[in-house]
Length: 116
Image 1: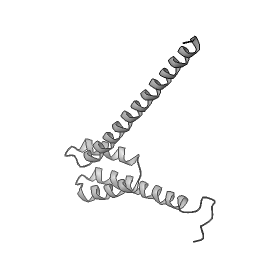
Image 2: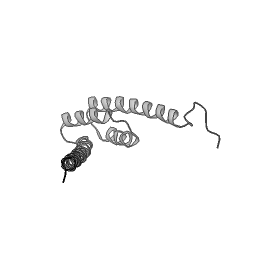
Image 3: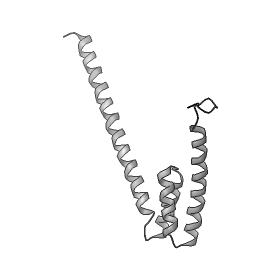
Image 4: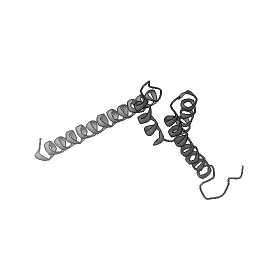
């Protein structure tokens, strides 16, 4: 084997290990994010008001239809007035943002309505 072959093999091995490391770290990141989302959704109905407040803050930063439905359920469940006001405020902001994204995404992307 020549020096070039050994160098090429070493380079390929290094690239392969680097790629495998990136994939492993990415997969771990996805799992951690999923766990965090699940934990915050569960904490929204925690018996501890501070956890509920933290969960509200987290959910407020991630507007989507599922979280809007979750906040509606929370509003019907929550007894603490301060947390109810906070949830209502977040839900109102979320609904406005989702309505705006539907209007922006509901057309063909060129500013004109699509002809069906």
